[in-house]
Image (tube, rainbow, N blue to C red; front, side, top):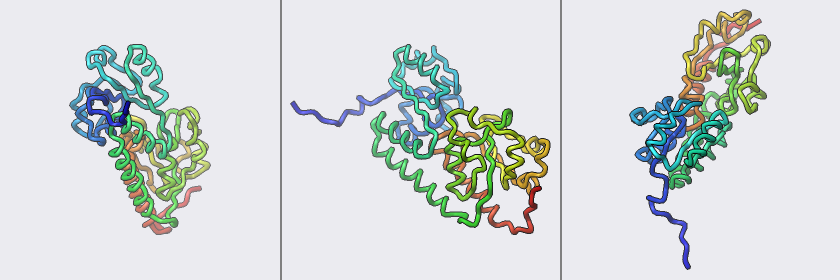
Length: 277
């Protein structure tokens, strides 16, 4: 008897639901967007994904709608979706949830989803392009540009950047002032005190408040923050959640913005920067 590893197209998942924005984007980039039958309400890329039925927010789903769509694969992300995964598995649906935290793990997820839907070669190409562009961006500002950066993922309580954000900052020529906290497994592990930020006195503040608009004036008005170099020099910038907090190919949008912020910082003369404290 002879066996073959090649499967017909019909053997791969044909009705895919994506519970998160980055899984939607990945499936589209793999060239299988027509197989998606349901998406997260937070999906923004590509634009045509917005036309798909909305079946989920990040931590909630429309179970009746999912039953109607009858998917043969459901993709999601994060330990925060563990209850959703549990409920869907009880319903008998095949579920694949990832929990990537680092850039290398994001590359692994690209490959894993590619294999799951029968697009391994395309997944390899996307992964190579992703890291290739990151490498090009890393060649930009140079070692003499090293702003000390505080990344704020949430404002109440203050939550610093997750691992992939910290890695981007460091790779692109900055220094994450809370790098050690980025390795925390949960958001609680990344909470910081306002006095800690003041004491570390960052040159730049990057903020992305996980689904709501950053209020830069609110950041500036925090007690004691008027002494921070980033506040004194007006180096506070918002990056949209879709560009920095979704662990997939869209991180390149955030990386380009960070690279530009660092290049602009490098171009300033010492006279143009006010020292804090």
